[in-house]
Image 1 (cartoon, rainbow, N blue to C red):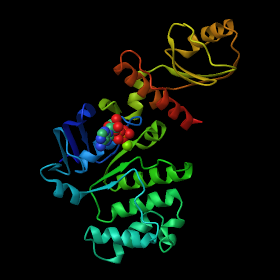
Image 2: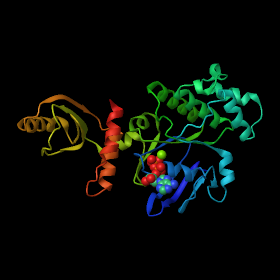
Image 3: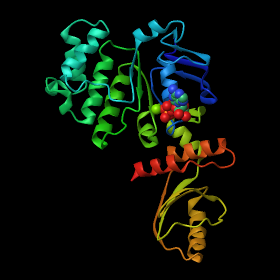
Image 4: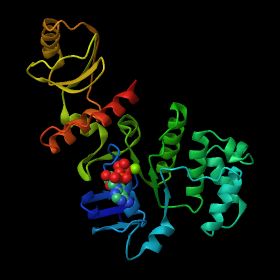
Length: 317
Ligand SMILES: Nc1ncnc2c1ncn2[C@@H]1O[C@H](COP(=O)(O)OP(=O)(O)O)[C@@H](O)[C@H]1O
Ligand SMILES: [Mg+2]
């Protein structure tokens, strides 16, 4: 039995195809569904967790159909939504106890156990209103674990957390996976997915455009990422083998087939335009580049999404 299987899973909202013919098989891994805002991540999770009816297609989670056997599915999964779901007027322990009661889990032991797992034991009796964002996220994870789910769905678990908080969440996710759990996580932070996920699915405008291990996806596009910092926005210049993939203010990001051969020509062309280069950085392609390559190819006419691009590069610096 595969933990999560989707076959032609589709959801329409009126004329909008929010999720379009998605096929997926996920089992005992950390699987990341990656895409910018509005690409269909939450809609996918809502269908897999039985909370939203598919318009077409089927999905099975823990061996049960998400529509016909929704109750069976719910017994075996947990879902942590994107928005905070803890009651700030209760203590951490009270919040977890509430969930334990909701799921029909008896006994203090399990409550203490999950609080301990999430490193909240020493703050368990403080009001959650006094918790940091990272602690609240960990408390939500503790709640989600109380009935020992086989499959855990996390929608943007690190959204809005600081660096340490994000790292702690991913560390806990890795621990759960080592324990044999299947974890399905959405994020629009490509760099985190690259580090933390065994495999990722790249979703753009509702369509799954690639699915593989992060390193395999990066190898697939090949070449190098070149970032230039210039005294003013770099004008587009034509240099073979190198192409501008995005720009914000004084930063321009290029994809080069062979940076060592092509960057000198790029610098010469920019210098001819009177542009002063203040910084140059060459690195391996990132998942951002993979996403831009795949989503760009899918979207003929070059409707480059500058807004999500800006979000991506902001996150990196
Ligand atoms: N209940 C809804 N009614 C109408 N449109 C919706 C609804 N939920 C989501 N959408 C639309 O579906 C698309 C995908 O949304 P969503 O799955 O929330 O994306 P993501 O989680 O990747 O940001 C977006 O264009 C969004 O506006
Ligand atoms: Mg979402």
